[in-house]
Amino acid sequence: MTTRTVFIPSEHKPYYRKVPVEFEFHPGQSALQKMKNVKALQDAWSLDHPDARLLEVSTKSPEDTGRRLSPFNLTRTLYSLNKEFPVENIVQASKVLEQGGPYYDLLGTDPLSAKQDPRTTGKLEAYSLEGELYPASPDFLFYTWIYAMAVLENNLQRVLLDADAFSDIEFAGSDGNCQARACAITKSLLTQSRLKKNMTFEEFSRLFLVSDLDEVKLTPKKDFHVGPNPKKTVFSVGDWLMHPAIGQGQVMKKTPRDYTIMFRVSGPRTLRKDVVETKCSRL
View 1 (tube, one colour):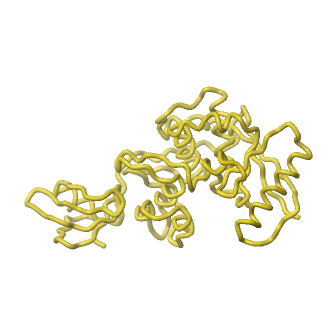
View 2 (view 1 turned 90 degrees about the vertical axis):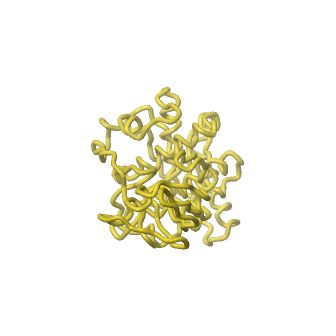
View 3 (view 1 turned 180 degrees about the vertical axis):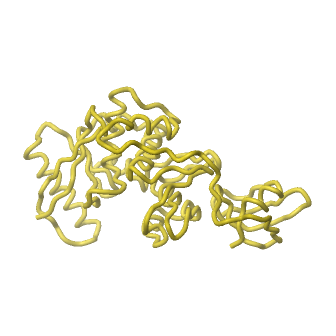
């Protein structure tokens, strides 16, 4: 037997409740075993909550809607790159840890590889996304903001509203990011008409200021540079560099005024010479 947490929307802050559910566990890491565990969890839930629909939110969900809401499949547009990325990639790529980060190259890989990249483990200091810093505490706030905005961007509100509770078979802990908790919070805020598309992080975080959580301490907006760049760095054609908001790229052309760089994620971009030489670091 084992236990997983089911998350239920709550009208009171922090907008969710946790219900532990015990069920018969099927050991193994195969997709089939995980799907068996999802069914066992749902069966155990139904015994005590026959009228409450539980939605598994993961790639192992038996329902298409649950798979669509997996952070591996749910996408959000990064407007600085004019491109959609899976929520999982955005969160992992944005991590600023004690030993380094952010790692924007993770935007260009598959979600599982981004999640399992060893660079993303360690003491989390902050998140850095599109040139701005965001606090790492409370630990779920940045993730939930990204997730909720992705739900609205993809018009998946009805999917959440049709479910009563949410689970993630892979989430066995009590802390950290969890899409089931994000779903419960998002549904609660939707039913209270407190969400809107393109909501800023500051607007979203204010919804949690007086709650069971510690008050959110907002990090002032500022540019985040990957590594110290006190002086200009001059690049040559063929050099690889790291841009703080766009990620890794290779210099393809250089003129007296600008650089043309082929970025791994967004493709070719032409940037002003002073921007490249003051903001980018050499790889």
